[in-house]
Length: 455
Image (cartoon, rainbow, N blue to C red; front, top):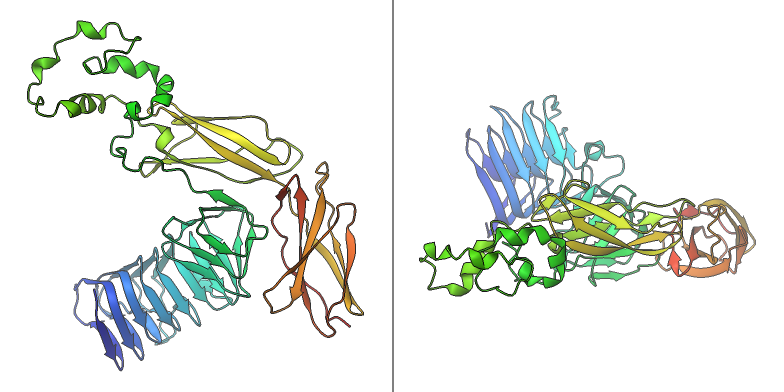
């Protein structure tokens, strides 16, 4: 859990069967292997730094090795899996691997029965073509200067996208940056999915749409009893049927809709609570009140203009559970057919009550770079036509010398699909991206296209 262990070969070796190993902190440094899981046992890593040619090795020489990594920092060439019955589950942590996340070539063994599961919030830096990360369910993988978000990822610690690095946030992925974590963008983000954050995203946000973190106005208002509607009186009309379930609330005689309440004075049968009269009505209400979606985390995926009505894709999470649309809540919104910002209302149903409103953006669909032709101190750029019916206000082009980080942005008439960028440096290759602007909203930047060398 702390301290430093330095060794010429292996910092920690389990050389006996069925010895549980737990690492939550500290610094393990070795020339070859930091943690050598050599025999049957359970290994859990939640923190600390493991630094070696092979930070973690699972050999499975005498039985089953079960290893779970949910945190920590790993520095080296690769992690090793060379047994037939090893299970490695990666749920978090930061891995800086120069060759591969997982390999089997230290002893030229074959992990025929091995199982590697990658899911959760791990951040992996590895080499291009690393086949050990192809089955990732969720996490972030960087190869060279290009990264990609897989699934729904919540950052567990600060992350910097460095100069020259690009992070792809695909349409089926989302990245959440909690309030106590900072995302610094010194490179670029190519966005199609949702980036959920507050004011804790810094740097180059050109073309990036940030969905605000859900409001948490009352963090101390009793999250253990989210159904206490008296703390949010504005939502009372959404749960009119729950009033008769709390007839013994003598401290709320002013409820005109429940005239039958005074006729049930039998509540003095619970005399054990007079010393805390202020809590008696609260404890009576809790068992019958429904959890309110007003306290839920509501996120709405950014939509793209198609010329047809775009339906909002809503996710509602309450008390650690993802609610089911149609069963636990319903969604109402006006038809979102044009580029703009729309209001979405989530109303609880079934076992849930309350109401919450969120915003839903429909942004232009991005163009793509079709062709780049290098000329004398210039590059002729051609892009695809905007989506039919969009009628954008303008097209923006950004470009830079390949290998540099600073972009130059220029705007052009939306009637154009071809422009010539002049004043470029001889012998240099340039990178180009385009995007569409409509009613103050922008599409994501297109994928980067690289020109031939300028003549």
